[in-house]
Length: 264
Length: 258
Ligand SMILES: Nc1ncnc2c1ncn2[C@@H]1O[C@H](COP(=O)(O)OP(=O)(O)OP(=O)(O)O)[C@@H](O)[C@H]1O
Ligand SMILES: [Mg+2]
Image (cartoon, rainbow over all chains, first blue to last red; front, side, top):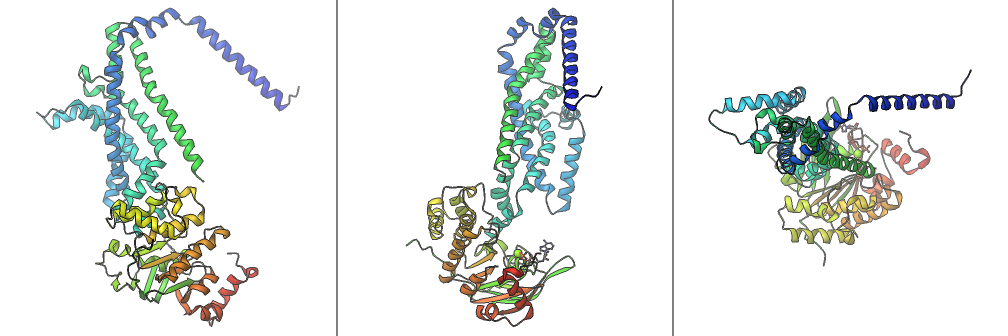
């Protein structure tokens, strides 16, 4: 029996819907809701975590993110400029750096760092914020550099030439004319990189943190032992990340649609 | 009253200038002189090397041979301070190249402040005077993308004038404009010429060249084919290549599809 294309599409939609309903019903029946409740959404544990999770965990996560991103941005800009330099060794160094740090897991970098700093500088104690800033920033810089380079190359060459023809030296033309425009162009991907750094702060527990230095994930992991409430503390920590990342994601999308609109 | 102080007009003397891109010789032993206060129009078919020649004068392109003298200053000397030289040479581009992240006023003050080290108040005064000169005194706080093409090009002229240049280079300043805004830009350039600015202008506007240019230079294939007064070159060309080019430009039915 022949079906029209429309009939076929409708039948297939009904089949998909039916399968979906069956799957949901099966899950609802088989899942042990009481256990879920006590292991994921344990209210006593949730209550016990506030307000410390905000005052310590969320605060530190935001603090680490900002300082690491700032460090990564400065280093990333330097790498992006090196990658575009006429002096070939600069390009080689920048390329090597970027490929290396994008090619290995961030966790390995942090472990190496946590172990390497005390070994390399015996007797000198780096404050936690500094270790975090450098470790996270070194990795972030590799990604930021590529983004910025794309932005710098997206600024029309005529902008640089106009600045030079007004008597600006090359560095001044870059600083005053090209770089500000490049930053505008890359605001959306840069915001996304900020979100990535926020999430990467969850890996720095491997550096060994004192209690007051806990960020959200370490705070949550500790809570698991402390409350015996399943992974409820991690669920809470996850919600805290979303408080930061969801609005930023929204912002990135807004910037993106704005720059798409102004592009003519 | 709004007249800004003008440095003295400088002449340009180009001697045996050559320029190659790889194996391609784009300029072949060009000789050209623009006397102080003179307006010279460069005409010629696409790809003949007009832009390259203009861009060699302020060293946006590095010549391969020959010498260029701007106001008694040998710019092709390897020891020359390029940035110092460019302060006195204004350039206007086909695509305007206004800085889109700065207001119209800031476009005209940024180089005054960063390069000439003028204070903000003085820079703004000079900028405002030049914006008024191009008829855009009330547009100071706008951004370039809020202006028409003709207005943007006038801002670009005001931006260059704000550096008190003694030589102005124009590379097809009206080629990217809608036909109805071409006139406003050309009339600004006429005024500049009348005020005694030394100008080297690449243009396809034959009427402008005929009316304003003291001399017209026809280029083709990287060489100067013919030069003389506008009556001579445009009115009564001697070389077959010039005649052919002018016929194509002036008679629309012969417009080259390429
Ligand atoms: N950066 C470059 N690399 C290689 N070749 C180039 C470069 N710039 C220009 N050329 C070549 O040099 C020749 C002259 O170019 P130029 O832009 O000076 O011509 P033009 O007379 O200004 O033409 P138009 O009227 O189209 O602007 C052309 O053949 C062009 O292809
Ligand atoms: Mg050209």
